[in-house]
Image (cartoon, rainbow, N blue to C red; front, side, top):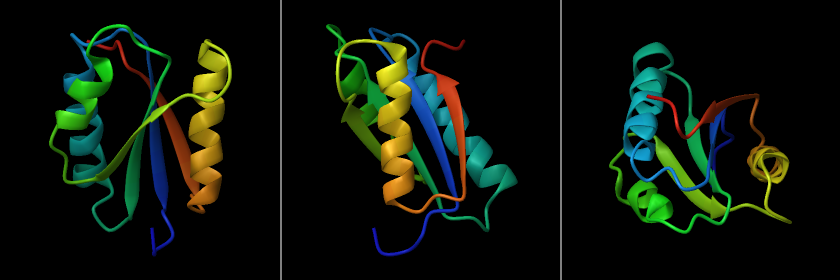
Length: 104
């Protein structure tokens, strides 16, 4: 990424294939509606899902740039969050928000 990212929204997931598309779409819409002037990034940090969570997250069309990653380390939400913050720091994010992947 060339430009510094203003806002990162991280989504922790594990086996949430039924809800992830909707969550990603709502995050994308919110970023575009409320922060259109900011450069944003959606990061999906997957906790080794055994279903199609990652595939559905990847296929969800967004206007906001998006990354879908395997979390670092062992299974657990803490490592999912850690993965998001590692990437956020790498892109120079000014702000980070976290959202669960199973919200309805």
